[in-house]
Amino acid sequence: MILNRKKKYLQIALNSNLGDAYSIIRSLPKSDRIIIEAGTPLIKEYGVDVIRQLVSYWSLGDMTGNQYIVADLKTMDRAETEVQMVKNAGASAAVCLGQASLETINSFIETCQKEEIDSMLDMMNIEYPVKILRQLKKQPNVIILHRGVDEEKFNKNKPIPYAQINKVLSSYNVMLSIAGGDSLREVQRAIFNGANIVVVWKEFYKSSSSTGKLAEDFLKEIK
Image 1 (tube, rainbow, N blue to C red):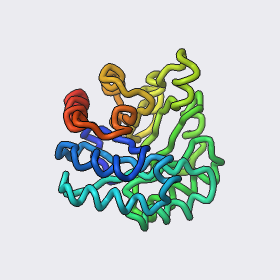
Image 2 (image 1 turned 30 degrees about the horizontal axis):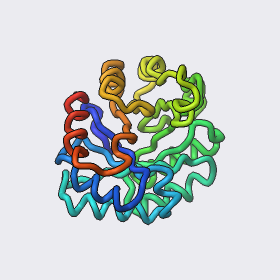
Image 3 (image 1 turned 135 degrees about the vertical axis):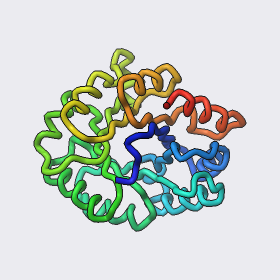
Image 4 (image 1 turned 180 degrees about the horizontal axis):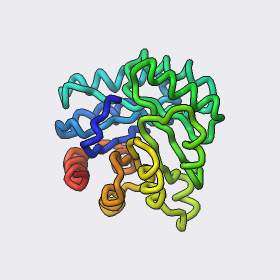
């Protein structure tokens, strides 16, 4: 386990292009509570080599001395192969979908443990995450409760699954990540309900003059 359970983290998902990724990373405040995510679109556009690029950008900024990059693979099969690929590229954590087969999820968690990176299981579109967790051989390091982008866009009544936070944490010794909300109010609610990590992306899709200040504002809410 690389993350500190006693800390609250802001995970910034980068989904645009390498130019914006570079500008955003260089403008972020120095903090050991910032996590950078190589978003799925970024990985599909550039391949796993984008992880090496993000590590390089972060090193140039000397933000924390300990770059933490999440590879949002959304793995559905070939878990061992995909985990090893991103580990070799410099990732600190990888993401598997909770909708994958139990065999794939178990292989994913086992390989992450072997490769010494954090395993993150994304429960997007899963109504009762605990039902998946109780069938696994081992638990992942992080459970992601996730309202998808398309869900939010086309179903305005779809809530962020805050209600599942306590159900997961009361039964399993894992860290909890919330994805699918980007406003300060949504961040506050996630932390209030017990989340360890809050994932944001909309306000960090493109670099702007206010990117650094925005990250500072989010960090103030994540205590």
